[in-house]
Image (cartoon, rainbow, N blue to C red):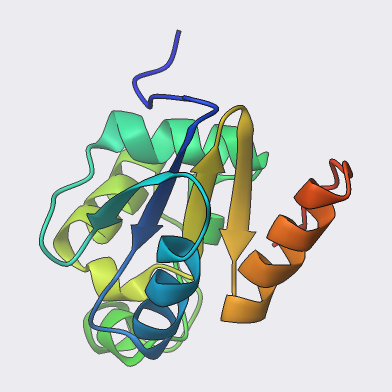
Length: 137
């Protein structure tokens, strides 16, 4: 059993309110016809266990949640790709939430990466049509 609630009547949004994507995505999610739990990672610490569960649900390694080209990441680690262990990637996300590659929506048993607000609109439209396709990162 995971630590992230998967209530079918609630959408949980993991986002950064300090990014353009976060500022644009939040209103779209808020307009959904379900209860919303917005987790602003710039103000709320997401634990390593939660990051691990989100990555697992997205079927990606944790490092793929980190934008290694983001200026804040490059400032600390340089321009060359780095090879960190899983715990180090968790720490990167905990200490520098601005490097998250995308917002993440948890809707019941579905976990969806949101790279643009239109991804959420498409998901809601597809979900309303009964489709269950999860976009890939």
